[in-house]
Length: 461
Image 1 (tube, rainbow, N blue to C red):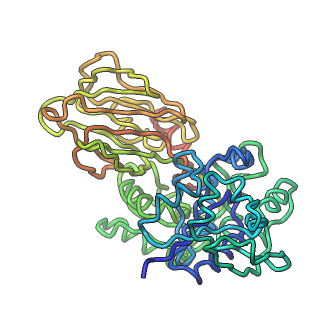
Image 2: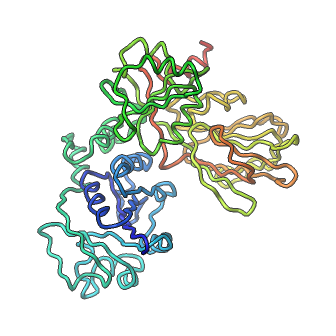
């Protein structure tokens, strides 16, 4: 029997407790519920408002991510597009029996060919006849049986609520406690979403009395010593309020790579050497744990695609950096294209790297680039041991920049790709930009925030 998949698309701007309740109800009827928040829609300009997609993606994960049988597809956010239902049908139909979830209001008039699906949707008339629809029916709403599509299943709901109501409450400073799950409500409040004209990317707050999921570098003896000193409530990840990482920057990068979709803040305690992404042990020991006074920083991640010899692209995410480097004793010959304009036809070097502001304190700095402030709206492109052109070392990139680093001679001068130090094997090109969906929250003791760390680097403290 084929897997039955409910395609639950929508603006979810923002998603609320009522959306979670609908997803849970659908999960009792289908094998999987695939939630697909849409990107910018020409027919719904409110989906492209002042709340950037990276925040909306985090909210979708916070509201739906922990629900059994429910997955969240962020591809529309990442590609900044609106995938219509006929495209979703084509994309996923090989995976099982698809059911498109719609509200009862969209089928009204179906018997006369006048429903919104038939009149407004792209290829709606064909979809009406050919695909399966799960029709959500709320109490008190009249739904005529003759208006249903030929392949329809009615799902009765006892759920009230709307995104419009949530936005209106937030814009007027009203309580939304009953409209949002607790973690989503806390995230909205932290960054002023739907309240401030421009959302913040950092906020002062507290972890006092918060529960944590421990990520310890078990191979590090100092990490084990620091773990023994911790007080506080250690729980499983599904019950945690934040992730406590004890180790070096490598341990933090591994934890982010494995757990960023949980959308839990990462609080690190440095048991390594430099520890740019973590808090110093003496700062943590000076106060009770979990700390009362902290700064949350939402840091962007890289969206990366590695191109193989057949031209296929393999996507990945990075937090710090990604680079190509020579795989043999010969220098790499790379072509650098920025925003579809070829900027360096032939870069002769050991390699080339792209880095976020957070990553600018690591390999990018060791290659000669200046570290960026934590809230700098920019990222970096850096060359390693550049021989030609001799004057070029690095470039500062705006947030909407796209970069392609292509190997000019992959046969004789192969290159190896890396993401946050993890090898991705040999490739012929790297395509990179800041992600529109992926981000990670790092938490620092307010007395020694990341901004202070970078200032100390620049002034030699």
